[in-house]
Image (tube, rainbow, N blue to C red):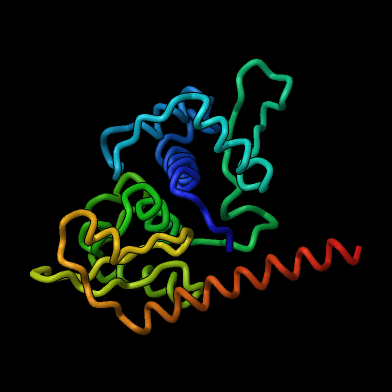
Length: 212
């Protein structure tokens, strides 16, 4: 599974969002992608990225084959689309509901099932929270691609976070002035195992490249 930086998460999340919610303008131009990254709605944190910053992130993602420019490099205006998931030869394959959840977690960080249901209608319609919870469990079983975080003091629901980056969510809670949450041991071990598996895959690919 590909590990993404915070800016890479924002770019991939925006491309997924626009692919599903506004297919008539997808793939995106560079200018449209910059505007999507800097939206003040449905983004946490709100960013103020410049064109050069987004282009730098795109260069990395294109080199990693997670984004491509379908207009070609000689075209005057880029047409950008993600190859992060649900491609013909890619390993990551998500149902519409799972894709909506992954997209929201990439764009807004950890959220409860109730929050996810209220924020995903433009991507996928969940009839009730149990359907969201079923998709979250499927994402845990498949990857795990998401993790259930320890419930915060005073909160009724636990939040879920994606595992496509290396964010320390407990430390983030503390930085935002919230009480540090005791680590859920099982979740911590799952995240660590996932990181080690990803590292083994990278090393195996490197060895194969050297032997070749």
